[in-house]
Image (cartoon, rainbow, N blue to C red; front, side):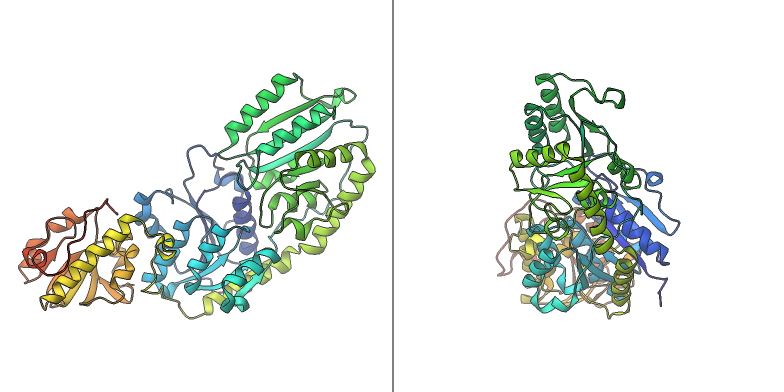
Length: 538
C-alpha cells in the first residue's frame, strides 16, 4: 500500500540540462507518478554555459513537482539547499552525480532520520560514482544499478550489501511503431544526442570520424545535438571541417548529389527525442565508458541502428555486433567509419539491424514491470527503520576518503583544542553553537568529545526540535536554561555575528568561546596546543 505522505526526491545537480540524467529523472518521475507517487525533481542551477530546459518543455504530470534550487557545487548555497531539501520531507531521497548531493543526503540523515530514507542509484561504470555510493552506504536502504558490470563492481565494494543491490533497466517509452526506411537515399543520416565532453563521451571523435567519412567520399549528414563543456570546441571543429571541404546541407530534393555536412543543433528535451531518432539511420556513440545509455535505448526503440564503442558496462549488455548494432574499439575512428560505410552501402543491413534493435528493446525493456519493481524498492525503504549517519564518519566524502582539505583539518583541530581546554579546567557542560555545514563537516570532532555536549544551538527555527549526531538542536533562549559551563561557536562565517550574544550568555554564567577570534584567557593559557590559523570554512 502506498504511503502518500512520503515523496520521492530525485536530485539533479546539473538541473534540467541536456543529457541522460535529465532523461532518467523525467522518465522515472513520470512512471512513478502514474502509479500514484508524488515525485519532486530537485533541479539545481547548472553552470552558466549549459542550456536548461523549461518545466513546460518537460511536460511533467501534475504530481511531478520540479523545484528550481541554487547551484549545488557552490558551497555558499549549502545552508539554503539543505533547508530546501528539508522542506521536501518526508521523502525517499535519491542523490546523484555530484558528491555534494550525497553529502546533503547524509546531512538529512544526521538531523531528520525518522523522515528521510535514502536509495543509492548507480548511473555510470566509473570510480567516482562508486565512491559516492560507498560513502552513503551506512544510510542507504537499497541500491539500484542498471548493468551487470555495475552490479559486479558495487557488490565487490559492498559485499555485505549484495542482497540490497538490485539491477533494473531504465524506464523508457516504447513507441510501438516499426521503422519506415526511406528508399533511394544516398546520404546516411547519423545522429548524436547528449552531453558534449571528452573524458567519458569522447565527443571529439565525432568530428574525427566525420572527417574520415568525407575523405572516403561517403555521403552523410551528422547531426550533433547536445550541450556541455566541449560544445564550443565541437563548433570550432565543424568550422574547420567545412573550411576544408565547403559543402551545402543535404536536402530531400537533392538526394542524388553526394554531399556531407555536420550540423550542431540546440539541445532538445527528452519529450522530443523520439522524432530526432526517427529521422536518423544510425546513432554514433564513441564513449570511453557508460552506464546504461539512454541514447542507445531510445534510438533502438524506433529502429535507429547503434554504431557504438565496445565497453564493458551497459553497451555490451544491450548491443550485439551484426545482430542489432555495429561496434568498434574505443578510440578507433577508422573502424567506426567502416561501420558507417557498411550501413550506407546496404539498405538490407540497416533494415536487419534495425529490426534486431526493436526486438531487443521489446525483450529487455519492459517499462511496466521495471517501474513496479523500482516502486517496490522505494516502498520497502519507506517502511524500513531509520538509519542515522554515523557520528564517527566525516560528512565530506573527500574527508572520509582520507583526502581531508586543510580547512576542514584546521576546523577539527580548533574545535578539539577548545573542548580539550574546557575539559582540562573542569568545565565539561557544553553546547555547540551552529548546526550548519561547518559543524556537519567536522562531525568527527564530536565522536569522542572530552566534554559533555548537552545540545547544539541554531538560530534557524526549521532546525529546532530536530537532532544532530543524536543531540537536540535548540534555540538560543532554551540553551540558557541548560546549566551550561560554556558554548563553543561552530561557524566560521557567522562567528562575529554570534559573538554579539556573549553578554546574554555571560549574564547566565556561560562563556561564549570563538574558534577564530582571540581565544579567552582560560583557553589560551591551557596546556592544549594552539591550532594554526587556516582559511575560512563556512
